[in-house]
Structures are given as structure tokens and as C-alpha cells.
Length: 165
Image 1 (cartoon, one colour):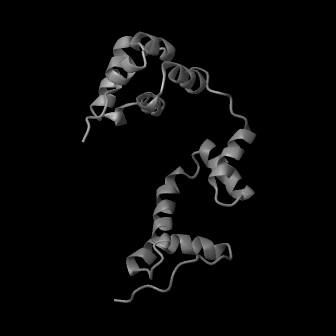
Image 2 (cartoon, rainbow, N blue to C red):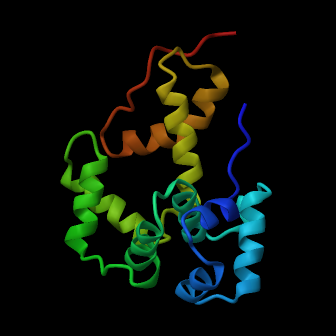
Image 3 (cartoon, rainbow, N blue to C red):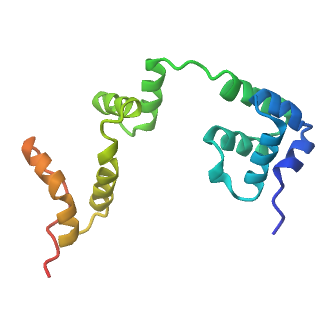
């Protein structure tokens, strides 16, 4: 198995100087060195997402010019996103266009109102997505969601009844 190329080696290969990268990122050279060290030693969770995405891009970049374009477009001067741009991006992620879902996702991105229940909703979705008869424990987890659906006059779709024990 070939040894993976290090980020520093890739930067040398495409003639991307660390001092230039630090200047574009508006960071000190020691900070950029530290970030590169985190990246190369597998401590990527210590990096900001935008820096991690940049380093991932650099590791695959064909040239210094492509890296500079990436930095300018995504880090130095991020393009102002209009509400229509965001709605278009969300619509592209959906299997089927649904204006209510687009609006909901947009609001979730801007608000923290639903943050406390997001883990619960994801857990419910994973239970429902199994496509099998539900265990008593799973139904107990779903009870608040089932009650919400009933209060709205809806029926929560799930496969079969629970497996009795």
C-alpha cells in the first residue's frame, strides 16, 4: 500500500508556500504550521471546518492556482448568499421539491428553537426507517411523536405492530 502524501509534500509539489497560505488565511505562520500538523497526524477534529475543507482540497489540488481560487472563493471573500440561493441549495438536496420542507429547513438553520428535540427526532427517524416490526422499547421511544401526530389528526407511518414478549 503506498504511503499517503503529506500535506506539506503536496504544498511543495504545487509550489504553494506556507507564508502565502498564512497570509491569505490571515493567520500566523506558526498557527498554520500547527494546523497542518493536526491535519497530518489525524487530529482533524481540532481544525475549523473551513480549514479542514481547505486542507482536503489542497491534498487533491492539481495546481497552486486552483488552491488560490479556492481560497479566494471560499475563505477570503465568501460569496454573499441570498435567501433565494439558500432555498435553491436546499431544494437541490431534496428528493422531491416541497416548499414547506424548504422553509422549515431554512428556519432550522437560522434558529435554535428546535435544537433540543433534534436528537430525539433523528432517533425516531432511525427507528421508523428500519422497516421492521417495532419492539416495545422502540414504541415507548416513539410515544411522544405518536401523540403529536394524533393531536394533529395524523397517523405516524410505521411497519406493523410491536413484537410482543
